[in-house]
Amino acid sequence: MPTISMFYGLIIRMYYAPGEHPPPHFHAYYNEFKATFDIRSCEMIEGNLPKKQTKLVLAWAELHQDELMANWTLLMNGEEPFKIQPLQ
Image (tube, rainbow, N blue to C red; front, top):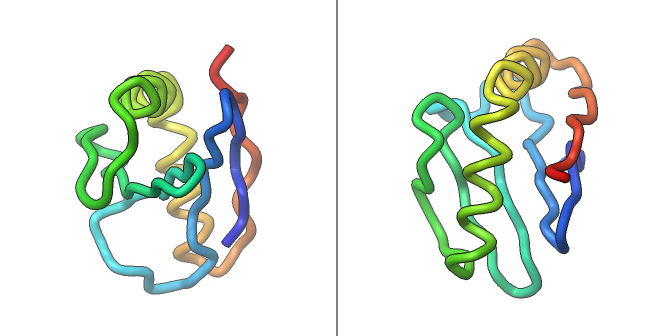
């Protein structure tokens, strides 16, 4: 699963698997926590993260929603995703 961004101890990844299940989403990891976020709604749909890290991921996702969707399209076509600028 390629890492597409890292910031403030968070690792953001997307599965490199054509036909991955909808909705378009990405995975966030922070220490022992992990969560899945819907790209279109920018909501956590599975798992859990500490409140502060959840807010950081959501802020980042809203800023990079178009890039996340472009990466999802690449992955669904069997292509490698590109890196996305971290939250600063």
